[in-house]
Image 1 (cartoon, helix red, strand yellow):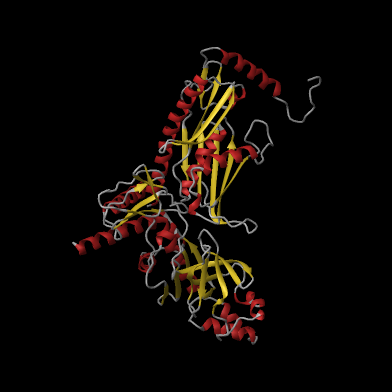
Image 2: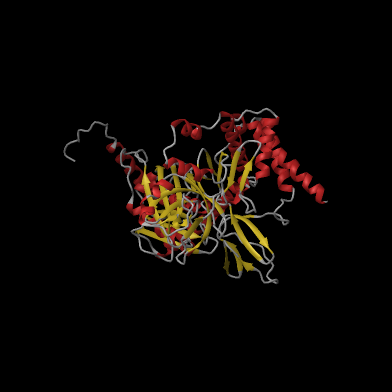
Length: 322
Length: 255
């Protein structure tokens, strides 16, 4: 709750506190055991009889398991590890990420993706705009800036780690590539869970939503896959100015939708709720249903309402199970 | 001094010197009153808070009496290209003072000595193996220097490191004591520091009972050193529990 702290009045504060207390008492969907938070060097309670595995953020000290991070203790069968709340993103192969180009180096782009190192996207591990499979020539290398420039936002996939620990990305599909006309939001990486689908086209809004595993979330105008490529080729043919204008223009309605979705993401991340497409759309719908202006979505009243709605959602889930 | 220097600002040097001499005379006696009414073995009230700055990956603010410090931690981020490959991470510490930190204006600058001491105090506690090839930058800014700056900086920096989610063996807490004649005074203020006979600073990891740094200046007898160290270690472990509760509080807020 760092970036967003709406000033609550007395009743709102009471409501928020009771909502948060209820959330604590309800079992969260991900784990069944009660959550325990630890600070650095706090001992972690373990049963030494069933030989446990010490995971990330733990250390053996005089026969006791102690934490080396601040966060929440997670237990998966025998594995005990600490999930840090404010740590950087830890990539896994196959993750879909959103990143920003910070540098163009020989044959590669360097991307900031909230990892401890910059990620590398090789020229050879992405599709060329003309879509032809061939060897990358020196000319391609010189034209790298025509594909991505510094500060462009890009969507890509984690390809793997090199032996020296550096991270390589790939963008070998139409769906990856430059993202334009939208907003990039950064949230803590732990709020994004790995799922089957990270690309979402919200048809009712005409908005694309890309939930990057690294906590970078893209909300932008919907682009048909492959349309981008067509435009690039056309660009080279020097299209007429009218067509260019229609390409660069985003209708006001869509802009409003983008802002509404973006504010829903901001709100959920401020409350510390997991960011799923369902939760985001749900929040946006709720704001529409109760006639809340886009700028008021970050205000105190809707902040509390969202917390209360989450309580109801979880309570109903528990009831269904039980 | 033969002539008084003609400066634009009114010089308070004479006044301050007089005050200091008075203080020194007083401190030679066995029993005297500290300016803020504390007893000799009583620390200043500590106010700690994480998340002081938004842009950093971790940050902390500490206020011990008049001493106010902000520490921001950036990283782990990729080391500069010129640096060689290394299996372990790098810790880069920098301590600076604001221009208005001390009564004498305009002395704000990087403090090389403090930077080196901060680095030495922290490097033993951070698990550098956990971030190879990368650097963690620790920037400490002293907003107001009210005595015992370095211990406050060290404690605050370890809090900021923990806030940034950097793996550590334990939190580092640090306390200093001053020696006045026969007395040992904990957590000295700036004016007490100005006329002390000797000082001792300990930075330690209380949960593991390990000392990461110890600085001793001035004249000390062995018995007194022992007494002072025990006093420091005890205060360190108490400070660490305050730091721990501060971290817990911020964790509960965000989850």
